[in-house]
Structure formats: C-alpha cells, structure tokens
Length: 125
Image 1 (cartoon, one colour):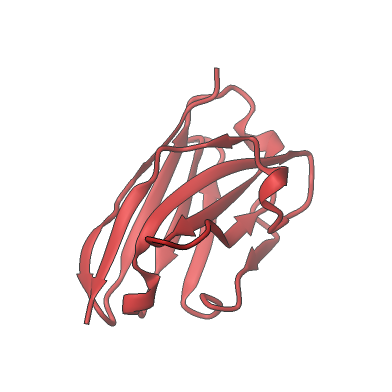
Image 2 (tube, rainbow, N blue to C red):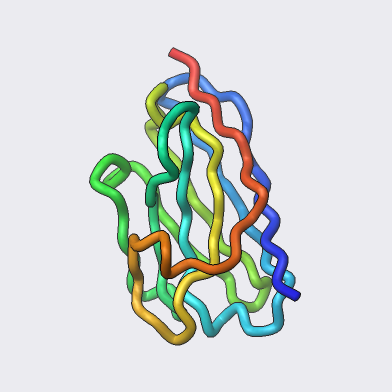
C-alpha cells in the first residue's frame, strides 16, 4: 500500500523560504518519478516540479523556476521541495504525487497515480 505524507507547510512572509517533505511508505520509491503540484482556492491543481529516479533530472513550472528546487533521498523514501523567494501567489495546498514507473519527468497530471493529502502553504504580503 502506497501512502504519501507531506509535511513542512506553514505561514511565511513574502521573500521567505519553506521546505516541504513527502515521505513514501511504499517499497519501490526509487523506481518512480516524483512530482509536486499545488492548488489555490478556486483554481485547478497545477504542476510545480518533478524529479526523476536518481535525482539527476528535474523539471519546473515557469512560475517557480529559479526559486524552487526539488530533491530526493531514496534511502529515506523522501522527496523534498525547497521554496525560496516566496510570493503571495505561491499560496496554495501543495501535494506530492507518484509519477511514472522507470519513467521520465513529466508535468502531465494523469501520469501521477498516488497523491498525498496536501500541506497548506500561505505566503503573506
């Protein structure tokens, strides 16, 4: 049974930083692309970042490029999202998700099959 649990959300001022973590209880974490998405009130869930199996390839939405980084620790079954220079428009619930098996990074929401419960990030101006 795969269970993804996010943590690290909270309230931060504009310009600040947060690091989100997502722990995977599954047995084959290192075999999957992992992704981060977010959903703001009244908006559709959107892609934020993805990382491949080894962590050697990453992919970001244009809106976060240069401010966010994504990494993973396969020994700990955990993926991270480091968010710097946060803006009020980054306010959303952030979700991690499991992507393609032995695949490549993708922003396609349909390629992700398991999702965490989400963690709230609020950026005040």
